Every structure is written in structure tokens, then in C-alpha cells.
Amino acid sequence: MVELLTAAALLLVVLAAVYGIWFGLQRTYSFTEEDMKAQTEARAAMNEMVELIRTAREPDFYTTPELDVVIVRAEPNLLVIWTDMDRDAQHDLELVRFRVDANPDARILYRDDSHSQTSDLTFSAGTSIRLVGSWVSNDADSANWLFTYVGRGGAVLPLHVDEAGDSLHVADPTQIREVHIRLMVDVIKGKLPEHHELVSVVQPRNLRTY
Image (cartoon, rainbow, N blue to C red):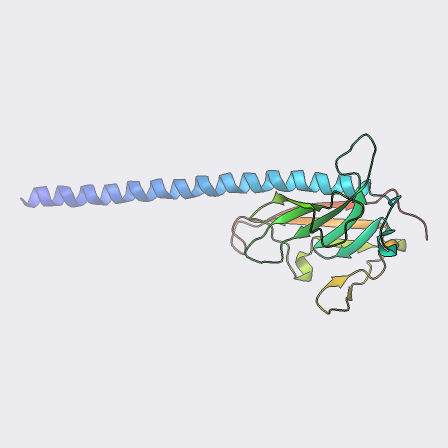
């Protein structure tokens, strides 16, 4: 009986070790899969942002004077531009917005499209496409901003608080000469391993000289 109990206890110990290793491998596999997906989405999002920002241009038609610019709105985690997003035969421009979800639990990078040159900045009639989901680490901390804007002479443009007092933005987007992008993704934010960073500098080629 003692030998049977000893054997059973040893078997339980071995099974517990096997299950522990199995569950650990499952967690590692799940994390690796999510991490690879996050990197893939981040690379695709970066390529899209670079292309659309580089080819942004001034619209031929606009509804209000503040929309008669190439870059309409420039914030740390939000950028609104005129660009030919769908590359149609007419080369019509769409008002496009890249933004990080304000909800810190969402951690999503979106591209919003107005589908029309008559839309305002609310994008209420447009569509939202998730570019990177659940893993974006860019936030309100200045060390983690998605966009930084550079003017003449390579000087970083200062950000100002808008009239509502709840949003930092470049007061005069026409002064922007470069858009620096730093896209950060992290499957488990704030824990090891370190987050991934994709960095690019974009020069919108169709800016007017003011």
C-alpha cells in the first residue's frame, strides 16, 4: 500500500509538471502569435501612413477656408490630411484622419475617411478602418506620441492648447515641413519584453511654400 501511494504521489508530481510545461508553452505560443500579428499590422499601417502623407495635397474644392490646406489638423496622436486614398481614376481627394483611440484600454490605431470633400472634421458620414488593434502603445505621454512635426530649419513645432482646452495641436499646420512618425506596439503594455517601434520621417511633397 505504501509503495502504491508513493507511486501515485510521484505520478501526480510528474503530471503536474507536464501540465505546467504544456500551459506555459501555450501561453508562449499565444504571445508569439499576437506579437507577430501586431508587428505585421504595424508595418502595414506605417507604410500606409507614409504613402498617404507623402502624397497629400491641397484640395481643388473645399467647404470652409480652414480646409484649404494640405494638412488640416496636426496633433500628437492625430493627423488630418487631404489625400487620394482610393487612387481612383479621377484622382479626387478624400479627407483622411489617422488617430490613436483615446481610450487607454482600446489601444487601436484607426484611419477615418470622409469619402467626400464636403465633409467636416467630425467624419460623421465616413468610415473607420482599424489599422492596428489592441496593441498600440502611443498615448498622451509626450515620450509616446505618434506624430511630431518639424518646420523650417529642422525645428520641432510647438503645440498649443485649443480653445476647448483639451487638445494639443500645431497652431499653423501650413508651417509643417516634415512629419515624424513613431509607431509603438506592445502586446502586454508595460511588461517585458520591450515594445516594438517603427520610425519614419515623411516630407509631404505637395506643400505650398508660405
